[in-house]
Image (cartoon, rainbow, N blue to C red; front, side):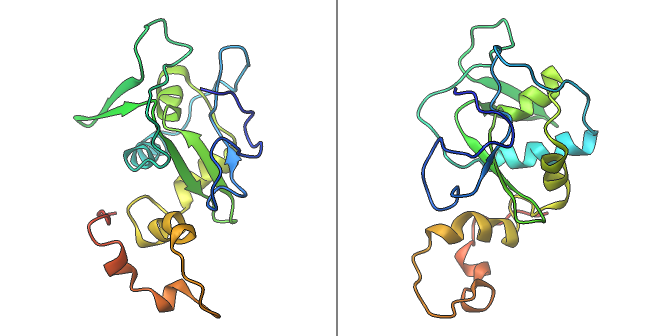
Length: 170
């Protein structure tokens, strides 16, 4: 996995969604990171983002900080298992910011006390949550090829129908 400084411009994959995204949590053992506990509610909400990843890759990345030679990483929360290390998440801030992070960020926070920038923590806590109409609209709208003058997704798309089968209870 590549290292990118927190809040630098995202460039790992090229697509419309990530034209203005910022990197978060692309850690490497060669670079220091902020070590400080995060609120429990932050970890719980971050888990939900990792359950709905984007940019799935074909391989797995390991945690550079753990001594185990595993490919990827398995985390368990509330009896549910996630295989981390092969995808990314997107988090949307209330100020319009978009954050791109590897799904291993959850492991970094839990196991290594990685403390992401406060703006990212605030976005996870207060921004649109995975599985909601607002979140799904932000994720998928750049890929919906609609070229209608004055197009307003909140009026012109029946988001309930568009995202049927993807919506999750909040």
